[in-house]
Image 1 (cartoon, rainbow, N blue to C red):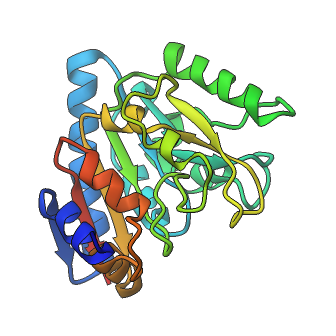
Image 2: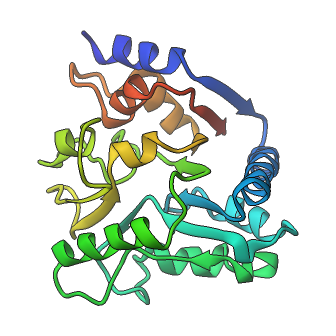
Length: 242
């Protein structure tokens, strides 16, 4: 099966929302997420959201931070993280605290993936403990992103762990990935943890990423984003703007 066919089939069962501007996308997506988090608080006493890093979600985080809800009852964590100190400019947690945990959301319960452990393997154990004891499961909301190589979360095409990461029967909620294309180890949610979420979004911007999403990369190999969308039983809301 070609990557083009794989891409089109993977996307077809999900809902797509295309916007004329990123501001409009961010406003509408933020309003929808806030509604779902509010529902989670009303129903369960607390809510949880896992977000992706990178530059794309920064404006969305700023929009969410302006929402006047009881953020002290919201657990906010990451889909994936580089194994770097939290004060590094490569740290997703640092970006999250700077862009999300401000304004009304300053009271949000930010729970990072990086621990003080020297070894990333111990960090996985530490974060699995957090998921089991500190972070509401399943997530009310998960926001995925996508790289130009078709990766989502830290499920990279060249990661030796890609099949384990996307295994629907994986026992661990998190795992390490060591893609040769990346300069450092990663810790990431596993597929079952993401798939269990009540609401899943794919947030991408730019024509280059739209082309990757719609057409793949011109090879016979299905990209991680397409494998993910093909496997997920629930509909993902795909938000895109140029």
